[in-house]
Amino acid sequence: MNVSASRARLRWEIGIVLALSFGASAVYAIVAITERLTRDTTLAEQSTTINRSLAERPVFDLVYQLLAFGFGLAPTALVVFLLWRSAAPRLGRLGFGAPVNVSTGASRRWWLGETGWGVGLAALIGIPGIAFYLVSKAIGINLTVVPTSLDAFWWTVPVLVLQALRAALSEELIVVAYLFDRLRRLGLGTIAIILTSAVLRGSYHLYQGFGGFLGNVVMGIVFGWVYHRFGRILPLIVAHWILDIVSFAGYPLALALWPSLFGAP
Image (cartoon, rainbow, N blue to C red; front, top):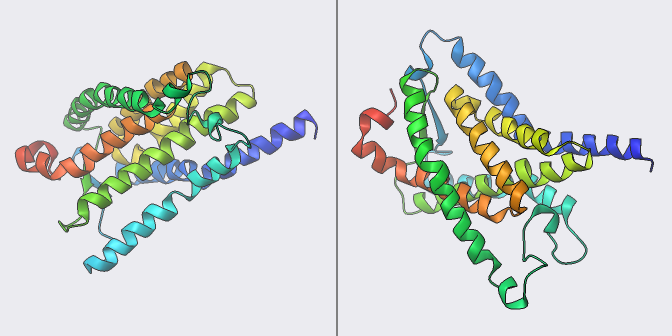
């Protein structure tokens, strides 16, 4: 296969992967924000819910939530399949697994250090992120985001943790690791790749408003730079997972303590 055909095939692959995942989400989010802007009420007077009930009866709600988690990971499984290596580290092209340039003992503990990086990255992004959300909502460029409207059952928090994990795995493995690998193969430079990934991340959060878009673009730039600098994806997954767990599971507490700040209008 010649170079031109190979690049064309790669472009088609990227298009198909994004059409099955966050490219489609970005299109829906653009339509959603357009519809919101054409309403008689301002963005600040509207709200959007991320995790909602999928059935009236609790047992079927749980079943649907678990199905959404499992099938929601299908595009992530696709990129893992596409970038899987025949030799260890199997997911090296995604920046996941024991690094090849460390000692045997250290390679068994690689995930500990990277998990710690993820915790620090979550703090770096999360604390200013809350402040930015409140400011963007106050100045009218963002909707009120309700992380969950699920009723309180024994399975509610575990399901929210799973949904946070799905979002972290999907976004970081597809929007960062996969896209970085494929865009490098197409010859794009580092800055262009980081910006492309960041703008895509912001675009599929447009359903939250322009504050959600800008905040996620900044997050995407930070995450993209970290991935470019270190080539490791686990810290990004851990950071994203922590941020979403705090957001999803911590929302009822935030609502109880500060209803005027976090409550729906």
